[in-house]
Amino acid sequence: MGHLRFPILLFCTLLASLQSRAQDRLPLIQSEYMPFLSAEFNPALAVDPKVYLSIHLAGANMFALNDLAFYEGKRFNLPDLFSGRLKDSDENLASYAKSATMDVRIEGPAAYLSVGLSSFGISTRIRNHFYARDVAPELSRFVFHGFRFSPQYDQAYKGDGSIASFMSWGELELTWAHMVRLTEKDHLNFGIGLKRLYGLGHVGLNIDAMDFRVTSQDIFINDFSGSYAVSDFTFRGGNGWGTDLGAVYKRMKNGRPDYIPFNAKSSCRQSAYKYMVGLSITDLGRVNFKTNAFKTNTSLADVVWLDYINTEVSELEQLDSLLQVRVENDQNITTRESSYKVKLPRAINIHGDYDFEKGIHLSAAMVLPWKGAKEFDLARASSFSVTPRYVRKIMEVGLPLSLVNYDTFRVGLGLRFQYFYLGSDDLFRLFDGEDVYGTDLYVGMHIPIYSSKSCGSSSNKRNLIAPCWGQ
Image (cartoon, rainbow, N blue to C red; front, side, top):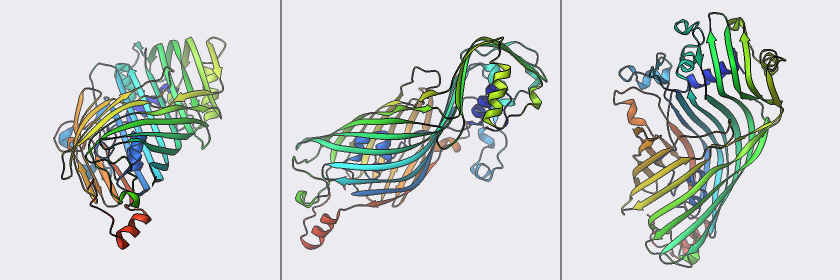
């Protein structure tokens, strides 16, 4: 757990650490050559890809957004960033409530296989998601500077409406996608992903109302109404189930009602669409934390934290005992639960792609967050993007133009080349001289197998492979 002064300080530390922002690997989420990646955005994109078997080895992706800390553009450079010599960030002094969202994914092994009119996939990943909103300006200053920020000593402040929630969990996902309608003019595909969720840990704080005052030694909190929840960070702190659902409509260039991907009966041809539109709902589900976990609700509680500077907590048991003494005592009204649930950061995704021929595509995508009703349910940022793409068998490049949370415009660059993919959805922010509220990189390795055994045999012996429709 690290050294904690109070649950508020834990969340302040998390919030202050968020100094980057990114999005969903926008140039590649509709790629027909990486179904392991596109299926995370819409499971229906896994069927009828340009690869018979797609094996993902490893990858990493980070999405984060905050409006509290930034690096001054004229002093920011990539060598200092990667070497660790970059100076401390600056503080956004604007007097409005601050917010933050983070989604860091470590993508593990995955494999997607085309079988008849279906595709089957298995994928693994570890995710870490942080969500905070409406953090009061004065509380945000303590977030940035720590509680030893003397300009705010001995003054009464309010922290009403602040919410923060951080969860770490693992996912094992099975994906099935199927071509449910095939005609000469159009294809309709459906996909579903079923996820087993392994809760690795959670911590959350919800402040409905609170008055607080900080001195050089002590913290005084009055009329604290809200809740906090903690689950110890272990391999099996909780578990649950989740699902992704999606559908894709394709207007075909020269479709066939008897088409079967990667099959000699279809002359091993690959389909090609003129345009494609899709709709998906992702991250439906929740994790139930019930091992070494607790959630406490408070109403009008008064807390006196004496000598907070010299108070250290490094284990869950120590934090639990400390909270019971300081908050959950006879003078305050509290209720405690030994388990609680946290919903995943659900989203509704709308997307489309138009093929202008000769490898030139124009894609668009919209991500709409669907926040849960409970105080610790996770939420993600909204985005709208338009991405010109150039697509070939061994390489793919895209230039995403995106708007995040309806107010932040970004220009990125993404690349797939043979066995590697990498990019950033906010790359040009690093070079335009403006203040940098963060950076974003994603990278990974995969092995594409382009043809099935029957089509390889047909190509060598019977020469039945016609020019690929999508090439």
